[in-house]
Structure formats: structure tokens, C-alpha cells
Length: 323
Image (cartoon, rainbow, N blue to C red; front, side, top):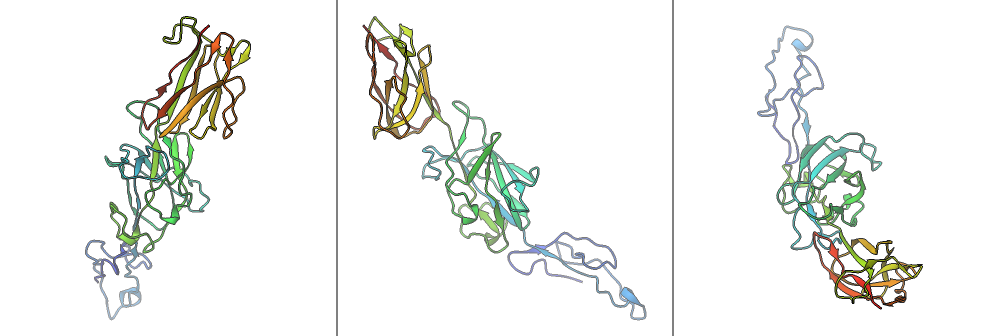
């Protein structure tokens, strides 16, 4: 007996399982639709005469992808000119109970290609979670996940960040449901093997390299040209604070200056011009910058620097006081 190898564009014959005389299994060869040879004996009894056990099952396979990219401006949206991130390890997890957590170990894994694309093919209908471990960069700080842009991946919005949580270096999506014939159409590029309506290629992940800004505060009786003085974290006996101030005059971050005069701001947003203000009062994030502080032997300097997307940290101009 011969069966069609598919009944529509979204399905194909399921795996052949042949057991003579057994009902409710798929007897059709997936390549040509042919069942095993069987004999009907009109003079016989039971399945020898009436054989109702020759069955064919059809299944709809689905594909899930799509891109891991370098989110240079870390806004959670893949902008024109932002490149794919190659070599990320991508894991696929089942989430049968739809609770937002993997049911167990990964059921499949792959790597993003030279353009940052990944895809899982031959998936059955169900709920899945994707986890991504970015590669180690050639230089600079390790990659961090972009701000989440879409918490519900079933919204099927393309070119935005779907990473909602990061645990032990792996960034996970929310739970996405795959349903035959109901997946979004027209994604570009379509790198899945399933037909378009069975292929969801909207699950993207953005990563960026954090930029740190650091500098020194020191007593320099020879003048402010060179760093040849003694590092200090106090104005007299009062603790000094380094305040990172945005272009609107509000404090972005505030850290105490270490006793040796060093300070550092971590994970500073790019594409912004900042002012560093020294004070004896820590600034409150979002509030106007505190007044600058006068050292007993001279004024602390303010410096302005523009932070742009980069893979290396910025060493801020140093701050000396002179008498």
C-alpha cells in the first residue's frame, strides 16, 4: 500500500515503525510512502483476511532561530550596522509545563555562525526556552546581555533582545510556543528548514562589552601636569566621592575614592558625554550633582570625556590638587 509522503505543505510522514498485525503505528516508508508487503487471504480469518492495521502517521516539524548580535549602543534593538556575534553557544530546552524554567538539561545545542545566526530544526510542537552563552572576546571585558526589549517571545517581534534572565553566564529567553502553521511569515533571512508557517525566526539575543571608566586622585605639589604625587581618597580626613554626571547635570553613578586615590565606574553607557565631580558627599543617582570639593591645598579638577562604543576601558584624566 502506498501513502502520500505529505498531506499539505506543513507536514511529512512520521518515522516508520513496522510490526506485523499491530494497529496504531506508522507503517509507511518516509521516503516513498510504501507500507511493508502484506498478504490478504480471502479464505483466512482475522487480520489474514481483514487487516485494519496498515497505518500512516504525519507530523509537522518546526524550526526556531535566529540571531545573536553585538548591541553596540546596548538599547536592546538590532540597528542597521550592528554585526552578528559568531561563536556563541546556543542551547534549546523543553518547557512542557510553561513555567518559564527549563524542564531539565538541554535537548539540543548549536553555535551561531559567522553572521550570528543559529537555528534548531526538526522540532515538534511544544514549549521551548533558548539559552545563549556568548563567546569570550578577543580583548576587553566579557560580554553582557543587552537590556531586555521583549519579555514575551510569542509576540514574534523581530530584531530585538529576547534575553530575560542571565544565570551562571547563560542568558535565557522566555518560553516560546511553537505551533504548526501558526508561526510568523516572511522573516529574513529564512535559515530554517521548515516551511515558513512552521518556522519562527524572531528569537534574537543582543550582547555588548561593558565599558569601565577609572582614574586617580592625588596630591601633586609640583603642579597638575604629571601623575607624580601621592594618591588620596580623602579631603583632609573627610572621605571623597567620585560622581559620574550625565549631560543633564544629574548623577549617573557615585563611588567612594579608594585610599590610594583610585576610583572606577563600571558598565558605563556609551554615546554620552560625562563630567566627573569630586565631592565629600556621595551623589544620589538621578539627582543633580553635588558641589565640588576644595582640597586643603588646592582645587580638585573636573574633566569631561565622551564615552563611545568600545571594546576597551577608558582611563580618565587624573585629578591632582596642588598647593
